Length: 243
Image (cartoon, rainbow, N blue to C red):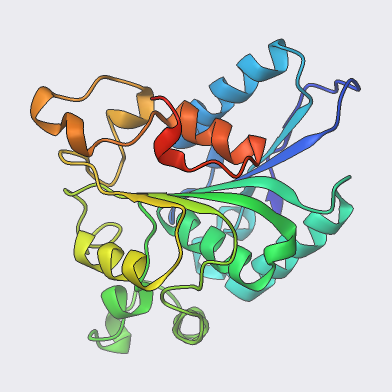
């Protein structure tokens, strides 16, 4: 498991470990906009004296997407968490397929996850990408597809979790919004936001830009605010956090 871990090496204060999981087909997690924005937030907080370590492991071995093994990667996350000072990732952030992986990880290892932030999670992945397609048209090996089929399509939510998923997302990218709404209705999310005018890439909200007037009521608090909530671990409803 390639781990792009960034740390400022500070020794003052308790270490806070943040996990970022990338989208499918990405071989360099640090290239994603969500990671870049997360790193900016972490850098500012480090400058203020906080001891934060940002982990961004890649789940495509050596950049080879065809060799992806989901169960093996989840086990590697467990092993990594046990080595951390607190035995957990204080906050887990995932975009797209990374959002699904974060959901799976917190479901099976809730004691190793403080809080989770899911950005356009790619749920119902087997159904959307493989179920109705002939095996000779699958873009991944059959072993991967079978492994994916056996995993929960909509994992149980066992830690405080916030989800953001745009109205413009589709089954061709992450998941159609109706799937997210069904999942949110069935599970105990801290909050679920479905902002208008936002696509799978989560822009322009992810960069902290102001929403158009017609979309303002549906937009969530800023990405920075949601990350701060996840890191603090406060039992505070997300709606109370200022954008």
